[in-house]
Image (tube, rainbow, N blue to C red; front, side, top):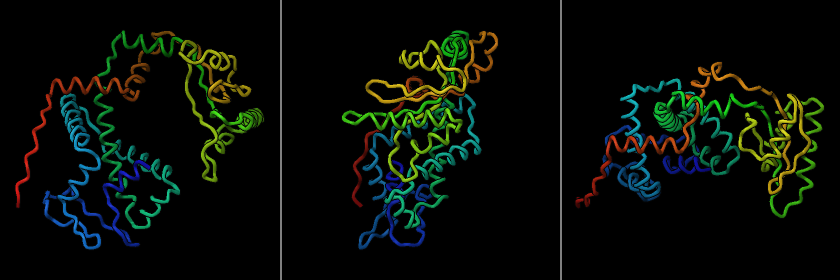
Length: 317
């Protein structure tokens, strides 16, 4: 919904059942008095669009966003970091498909589609800009990561030094005031179906993505767990007691609900020397952490100082 509102704020809401051609203001010279659209008796100019965008999304946020983009661009040029059109297109397509799924059946989105505002080409162009910014941030931040012996040893202790289990989980939350019987019933059904040999995705889909559009009854995921990682001890003991392919009984966690685990794979510890190169690649591929982003931006601001100039009063015309 947030993305719908953002796009609505940018595109506007012109009427008419036919497709609407929205002017590309970013690709033309800025002329404050030029009319952009007419809504009933009112004429909206480029200057008015500019003021409304600033008012809606916030001048400080927009300026800091531009400053951040410039800082990252300077760092990318200095470090010879490039972003290919193929990378941008792949991420933009993924975002577009996610948006379609997220907004399916949303009445506001369907209304705007009926007005011709949400064409695939227009939306993809928006997501391309978003994708390019995300890729720039990620590549610059990752370029600052250390791959020395200390960094590799720290990563090794969190990963390959431990016995690791690849586990799938589906969990049925029980919120305060709710009866836990339904959650336990659903968890038991999942266990029975999985032990009968049905595929994981087929079993959990009705609970995670109900076909009738109702809210999900469960949450799920898949991840690796190391035997030394910081997880609730009881849940970790249950996971590590399972062999590859085995499914747990419904597991009650106080304050949350019922879990069902399935272990897909178990891997014993590996020698440090045998996994140096793959650790380097994995460290490079990890998405940036918020602390990393803050540290890199702070470094860039120190190297490329920011200065904001006070706004001048607009002269009368």
